[in-house]
Image (cartoon, rainbow, N blue to C red; front, side, top):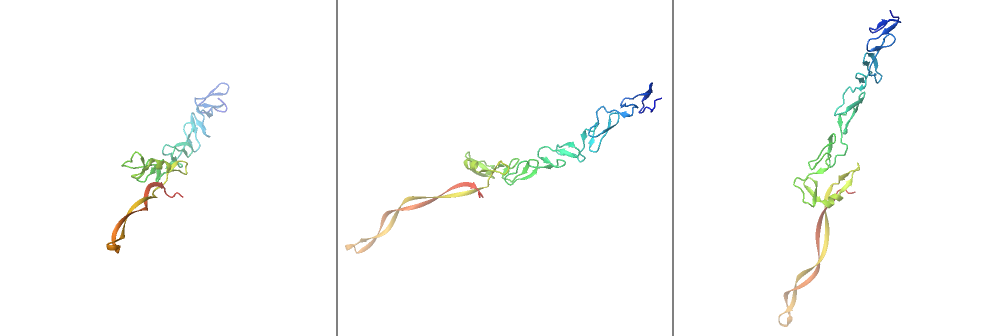
Length: 225
C-alpha cells in the first residue's frame, strides 16, 4: 500500500509508487492532464477538461464569448467585444452606417445605403436621373435636367470629405446689348402749291443708331458666396 494513497484509480506498485490512469499525472496521480493547455486563465480539472473563466469557452478556453452575439457578420474576438465588418458599428455590430456622405439631400438608412430623392440614384445618391436622356453635348444633373457637359465639369466643388459633389444649379440669363443702324421713314411737311405757300405731307428716309438686347442662357452654382 502506497503512502500517501494513490488517487484517481491509480495502482500502487513497488517502491511506494503510483501507476496513473490515462489522463492523470503527479506523485500520487492527483493532477489531471489536458493535452491542449488551458488558455486565458483556465484550469485543468479532469482529463482534457478545462474549467474556463467567465467570458471564455471551448475545450481549451480559447474561444471568447459574446453573450448578446455579434450581428451582420461581426466576429467575437474577446469577451463581449465584436469586430465589425465594414459599414457596421456598435457593441454587437448592429448599427449600419454610411462611410461616405449621402449626396444631394440623401439620407443614410443602412450600411453604405442612402435613401435618395427621386431625382438621384446610386449608393450615395451621387447619380442624377434623366429618364428621357440628354443630347450628346449635355449631361444629366437632376430629374430631367440637362446642362452642357463643359459647364457640368466646371460645376463640381470639393466636398468636406475630400471628394467631389455637385453644387446646386440655377439658370442665369446674361444680357447682351448690341448697336446697329436702323432706317427710319419720317413724315415731314414741305412747301407746295402756287408760290410755295402751302404745306404738303411727305416722307424722308433717315438713319439712326438703335440698340438690340439679347439674352444668353447659362447655368451657374447657386449660393456661390
